[in-house]
Image (cartoon, rainbow, N blue to C red):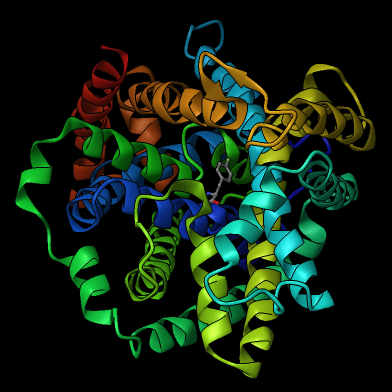
Length: 445
Ligand code: PFF
């Protein structure tokens, strides 16, 4: 039945991989800077609403499409609805996952560089207050960002080359809980800092006027999709390696709750520190790379150990997310071109890495690469965040809500004749598409 396609070794293997895909740079790096940029608590509240009103239903929809379709993101749509235009959603998924991986590798490269700099002692030797310069000098360099992007992508390619199941399962079982632990310890430390009160207020006490700002809603939907790996077929692809028995709603609920907890704890770790060190919460993508080293420096000698652990574990979390991004193209190419896994991985991996170079070089310095007045990295991020991700999500919701036979869709989730099934169906039919359409409208006009 599976035409020789791989399957997860255990139920737990799938859930771990799905959590591994969801939890990554999005929860720590992107969540912190987008929350900071979007004003804090009002954003957080809208974001959590988006996660449960749009993210959870769409995640369950992706799981159902993948398991029923038993193919890559394009093939799964085709298998369920042959000859119908829904497959455009699949093509969009391949495109979006490619674009995201191109810059995801760059940011992960920054993380690995920080890990390396703490290991060599270079980062530990920077004076307090000097980390903004340390960071800006690095990302503005001509070779460093590309070197570390290549390094990270080489590891991603090597793992996907040998097949997704092996490795991820083990690494997620050990490193995810460790990452959770270190985030909690660091958050606890942040709460002892002078700026703790201000940081917590920023994160949890909404400024009501912010609810009138449409860009906050747009940022929240984009972040919800990004952090849950939605709208680009990663979760469809992973669910396609599932045997029938796994209970999809439980898996979806688990992924959503864990992913959201990771982000909130990361917020509690970051914002007290931001205010303690007098940094601007809206300072953009550099936020964690500037704030956290200041925290580690403040911790004294133990700080370096924490820094090493932190950047190592974040790099591993980024790895399992990047693997799922590459797997979308690899699984598509294997079927479409009839390539072996190895060939598909090398070709897709090399092309996406090369496409990431202009992003790696777009952050200041002599080779700054910009297009439409935006640094290339920011441009690719904007295209995916504002357009292709929500559009992909819209296709998925509309397909499951309206395109797919309702009885079959409910059967696939195991929610036939249940209230939860009915609620899910109406969310996926009306609430999620309406919300996404509104955001797309805001973003386009
Ligand atoms: N969800 C990942 C994160 O939060 O870092 C990023 C990601 C992975 C996005 C896989 C999309 C994807 F398909």
